[in-house]
Each structure stands twice: as structure tokens, then as C-alpha cells.
Amino acid sequence: MLRSFRITRSSKSVIALALTVVVMGAVIATGAGVLARGTPSSYTPQTRSYTITAVPVLVHEMQGTLDYLQKDFAPGGVLDGKEVYGFMPSTLTVYQGDTVNLTLVNPADDPHTLTISEFGVNAQMPGTSSTTTSFVASKAGIYTYVCEEAEHFPYMYGQLVVLPDPASAQ
Ligand SMILES: [Cu+2]
Image (cartoon, rainbow, N blue to C red; front, side):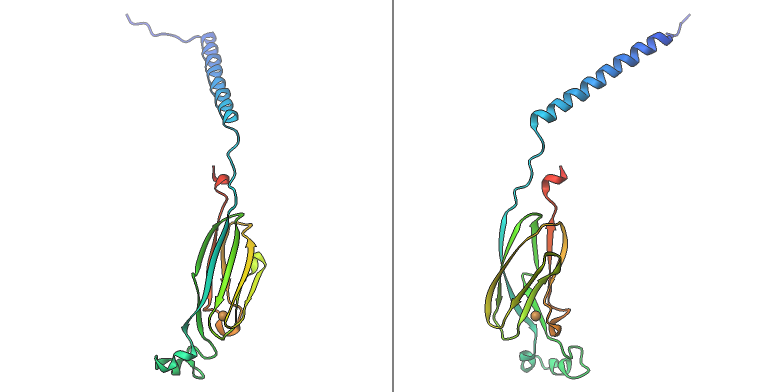
């Protein structure tokens, strides 16, 4: 006849105590390992430099080569009172904390701005000029940089992607 092994109340307590000791030992060992390695090293912010050029996409001067633009720019046309310019490049990607140095080139006569309101940037780009501006990308997120000239809004814009400090993801 097979007799089942019975676990008594006192043997349950012994097993529970043994398990507790093993688990606590593992926790202590893990903690010691973390202390030995130290806290995760943080990201060292970089200085990143870019040149952004204002480029004409659909502007008055092109009406001679693209005949449909005459209708578009005419009163009531789809580009009435507007001109389409772009920033080149139109996307910048940096890490949080980076210093961003921008050289802003405007080869044409029309003035522009490069404005990133979240970082207090409102750089003027006079006609036929090369200017510089700098800021610290202090917070992560996706931001828009725009030209605030009414004639160029909403066409002239770009995107600044600020990635979070990689150390904060560990
Ligand atoms: Cu503009």
C-alpha cells in the first residue's frame, strides 16, 4: 500500500523559511551587483551643428516656367497672398541636453524667420544673408520650426526631434 507523504504544519514552516532565505539571498546578491556596477552613466550632451537653407518651392519668380502658378497666385487662387518655401533640411534629430548650433542661409530676397517657440528661438533670416543661432534642446519631444512671415505660413516649416536622454531609459 502506497502512503502519501504528508507535509506537516511544522515542515511547511521550515520550507517557507528556507525559501525566504534563498529569495533574500538572491535579492542581496543582485543589490550588491548593482552597487558594484554603480548607477547607470548618464548621457554626455553633445554640440551639434547644422546648416539650414531657405529654399524656394513655388514662388512668384517661377511663374514664367510654371504657367499654372499665374492662376494660383492670382486673387482667389490657391496661393493668393502666399509663397511656398521650405527649410532644407526639414528634420533635425538631437538628444535632450544637446547644444544645437544653426547656420541659417537665405539666398533670396524675401526675409524669413526660424522660430521654435518652445525653446525661445526666433532667429531672423534677412534677405541674402547667413546668420547663426544656438539653443539647448532641454526637453524631449517633437517640435515644429516655422517661418513666421505671414506670406510663408503654413508652408514653411520643419521638425525638431529631441530624443530623451538615453541613460533615462535604462
Ligand atoms: Cu519664410
